[in-house]
Image 1 (cartoon, rainbow, N blue to C red):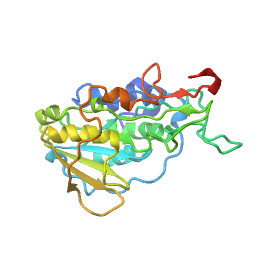
Image 2 (image 1 turned 90 degrees about the horizontal axis):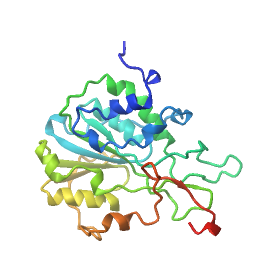
Image 3 (image 1 turned 135 degrees about the vertical axis):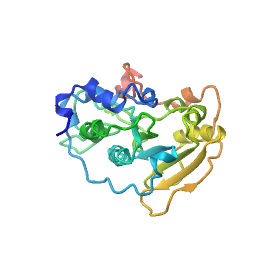
Length: 269
């Protein structure tokens, strides 16, 4: 019988399962979505999209995984990797609508929210009990989880729509020196339908590369094994204001993460 039940846990206890104090990787786990785990928003149905993870190196190889996968797929694949000895580290940084509105207008079918994070929320809750009972070792290598849909699919939003588009920063990840100190000399980027990393991740991967890590990549929609690759120097790489410039047009929430209502055009916001 399970020693844990996510139905009996509050959001702080659930976050502690995903980011235990004893894990060196927990300092990078994002608490943003976990703040909503005690709401009805965390109970939407989940698709069956797990698949096998035979491509993953043994955890004993000490490889850092970066899962840039859409919606809940990152969590679901992350749970399969946890069964192989990896520590899933959620890096989701976008808020659901604070009003609890659905992602689509039920009358017009028009999207009200830039990025639908509700399935991710559900996947985190659904995986909590299983993760708690895995008893992962404290030195388990990390599998960083990101939403490939974090930038949304529209360049601009209309007034009264919820803008929770986001990006990742180099500070969202440990440095190459930190990884090396913990025995990690290789990083593997996992994506669905592309080989080139998204522009925000390119900055982190290039820094890891400059720090001596060997980079590999894997597409889940292909049977090919992981392959080595290099990252060209991104635009504004190493610039002092890279973080500020990258965030232009994104809406920070006052309590952390990304998400705010689009103002009326007359308000000038």
